Amino acid sequence: MGDLVTSNRSANQAEAAKSAFWNRTTSHRKPHTENELMKFGMNLLLWSGEMNEGLIPVMESLKTMGYDGIEVPLYNYDMDYKLWSSRLDDLGLERTAVTIRTAENNPISPDAAIRQLAIDNNRRAIDCVADVGSTMLAGPFHSALGEFTGVGPTSDEWKWGVEVMRATAEHAATRNVTLAIECLNRFENYFLTTHYESARLAREVDHPSCRIMYDTFHANIEEKNVRDTIVDNRDMIAHVHISENDRSTPGTGSIRWEETFAALHEINYDQWLTVESFGLSLPEIAAATKIWRRMYQSEEQLARDALDFMKSSWSSSRPTV
Image (cartoon, rainbow, N blue to C red; front, side, top):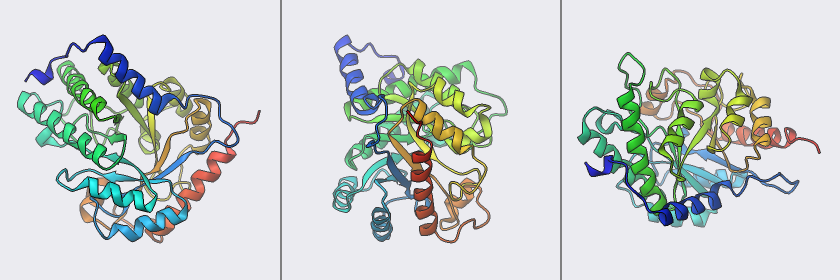
C-alpha cells in the first residue's frame, strides 16, 4: 500500500507540476477585457450516463447552439475515449469530464485495499480524461456517493482522504489533468459538504493539480454567503457547475445568480461555466439525483435556454470601469 504514504517528490518535479497547473488554469487570473470570452459547457448526463452513438446529433445541436464544449460522463473506463476525442474534434467541441466513487472503491474506507482500489480507479479515470482530449476531471471522487455512517468525517477518514487525493493528484500531473473536487450537500455525502471543506482538503493535499469545483446547486443548500465563499476560495476554484435549485433550467429558480456571477467576475474567473441539469430520460440517473417529475419542455429547450441565460447573465454582471 505504498501509494497511500505521502511521497517525497523532488523540488524539480513539484515545481514543474506547479508551473504546468498555473499555465493551464490560473494564467487567467487577470482583469477581464471587453473581448474576453467565457467557455460554456453542457454536462451530457441530461441525456446519457456514457458516450454513445445516440449522442452525436445531441452534440451537433449543442455546437450549433453555441456551446464551446461538453462534459463527458466517466463511469465506464473501458470505452475507446481516443476515438471519442477524434469525434469531438471533428464536431469542434472541447471537453471536461466528471466521475464519482462508490462504496466499492471508497477513498475514505477503513479498508486499505478499498482505498488502494479508489486510487487505481481515480488513475484510470484520469487516463480516460487524457485520452478524450481533456485536461479537467471534476466530481465527488473524494468519497463514496450516497454512503453515510451516521456521523461526520473522522480524523482518520480525513487523513485517508488527503492521502488518496494526493496519490491521485500526482498521477494527474503526469497526464496534464487538473482535478476539480466537488463538495456535495449533506443529503448526498458527509465527507465534504461545503466549498470551504473541499478547499481545505485541496490545500492539505498540497499539490498544484488538485483544486476544487464551485457548484451552484450545492452552494444554494450549504453556503450562507455566496460571495464570500467564492472570494475566500478564489485560489482553489478551477471549474464551475451551473445548476438550478431544482436541477432544471438555470435561471428559472431561486439560485442567487446575481451574487454568483458578480463574485466570479470579482475573482476574474474565466474558465468553464458548465450546465449540470438532470431529467427523467435515464431512470438510473433520475433515481440517483432524486428527480421525480419533468421540469422542462425538452432537453434541447433546457440546453438552449441555459446557454442564453449564462451568456446574458455573465455579460450583464460584468463590473463597469
